[in-house]
Length: 529
Ligand code: GDP
Image 1 (tube, rainbow, N blue to C red):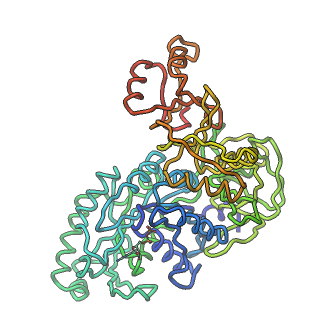
Image 2: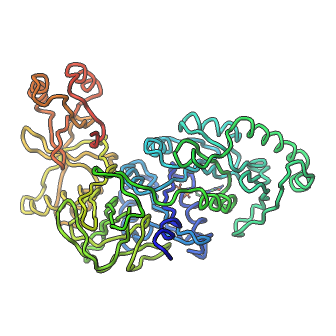
């Protein structure tokens, strides 16, 4: 197959949702359609239920054995689908944000009863900012939930989306009869039999056709006719250009658990979702069909097996082909690296591959060369944008608890930060080290991993900081900036890249500081230029 065809047939996407909306279940059903797995229950949920560290460790251990859960690839009707796993737990939101830099589109799962939940709002906001094409899947229609129109309103309001339903439920919960597919113009009847994998659909090209009454009963049929009339009156027709530009979001309804409405979603997805998209680097826009290879690291996975300390760096291929045993330039280190066993991922396994194409994810064994955001190329100096650090929400001093192991501690902290587990800030005044995280759970994770992977011990000390802001003075030589640095010197720190950060002890202080020094801009993300 030609290079261009290989690119055109790839769909790399992520599924985002609030925990429990049904992301894992949907992923599993998609894999069933792809023939990638044979039965339900094969996909391990990587969910953290109680927010306990032991849960996290258990998951990491499982993942150490099968890191394949990070990327799930399968073939469907000649299309190569790559699903990137995104943790739903809020303490790992940053991991998800980074993974979203490697997707070309997204499916958002919403629970019909719970509606739009906080984590969905956050994740969709990130996708919206980047104009990532999104499809919404309203799940759990076999349960009593919100009225479809009410839910569509809520999705538009809370998620700031412009929706257009491509399927519509006939009844709900106890009364759930099936789905009318506006995209394919047919009816799919619900039988509630979760074992059946592929449902039968009945062609209903004309809504006035009495076959509809026979299928779902006269009342439901008339109801549906009215509702669909309303749909057509209220919502714009589906427009692929608008969807691809991130300006319109098609909505599907179904029940992942019952494998209902999933095929409709997948059939539409493979038709409309974008193949690998061009990506902006600091230097220029890079197109997937360029001959020269380029890609970037969006995730680093530690191997939890103490006998194999190497890590797996996940690279999204942006342009050209990636070949085994070929030297590529590690742009930050200005070094050429060769990889003898690049991994490709499938539903339940990983495999060494000789060649990978744009849109694909390859896993490279790494002994400490890579950081999140690193670029690999055929030789060109390129830096991919869009992997910012976000301001953490929690801050603690980290102390060495075993003076004999200070080297191990330093190395451990260094590597964990490269993996993006948390952020390190070094105070300007006294060089003390502060760990900033998105969730409190990470502190335990760091402590555990430092001990088990690096043989180092640490303790934490509370620190009264509520936000880290990246400092961006209009004029670094101005008197105002000098005064700011002098007055706030106790709160100034450097991040790992050496960027200057202001640690604000409260939102109030931050506000006052901004008022007092208006020429010193404060940013909540590390990438602002
Ligand atoms: P995740 O946290 O988003 O990955 O959610 P899961 O896929 O683990 O689903 C959370 C719970 O909802 C599980 O108990 C699922 O069995 C259940 N669930 C998922 N889809 C459906 C559905 O369509 N109907 C019903 N009734 N339950 C569902």
